[in-house]
Length: 165
Image (cartoon, rainbow, N blue to C red; front, side, top):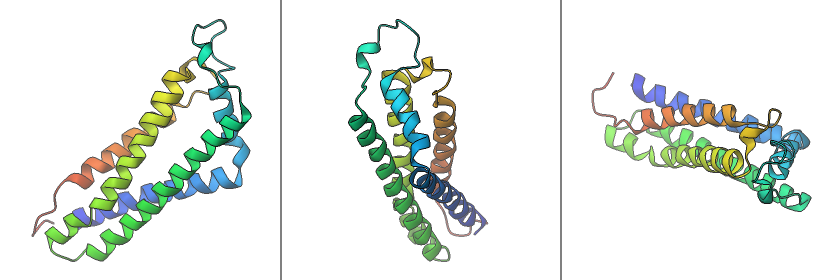
């Protein structure tokens, strides 16, 4: 039972994190919008770099990109809490039922990993050269979340068996 509770609590912790991220992005919209704007504009990358042709100075595109990140986070938040509810319902059921209840959490955690890997580490850090900015470099935070979520996904993927502690 303890391994099931651990999986449930770790998933709930990530769901709480995403809930706060969405809350912050909605109630303090401009803070992270500025981050997205600067990354996409590439206005703080190394002067004279040969990747500036990738810059997108369009405020409309900045807004659309930022809103797509928020929508991704909202979808992820919903899936995470749905997964928490499913694990909670299956907590005392046989191992097969609990393992089956892990489908939504694994989907949510994978969606989260993709956000950090694709949107932040691939598109932001590499395509828009976010790594060149001393001010708007979100690689450390993105990698930290990728690692945390990845670890929880690996724990979640461990099959539960009858008679586990």
